[in-house]
Length: 78
Image (tube, rainbow, N blue to C red):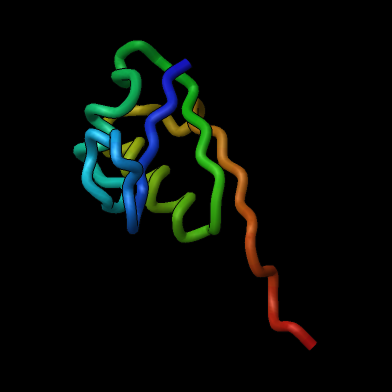
């Protein structure tokens, strides 16, 4: 298993990657290439999950190989 961390604000001292959001470059270099048919797991708020899934699909990963789980607000508080 490969785990790639993307820190959006502050990175640990030993991080080789500057802070930033997931992008096409990270998808291309931070995981397994799509031609190997890996299963990708994406978990987070809906907008994050949709963005990461779109990036994976654009990189050639099949929709069927992407597992998603969304969390966060489900509506207005009363």
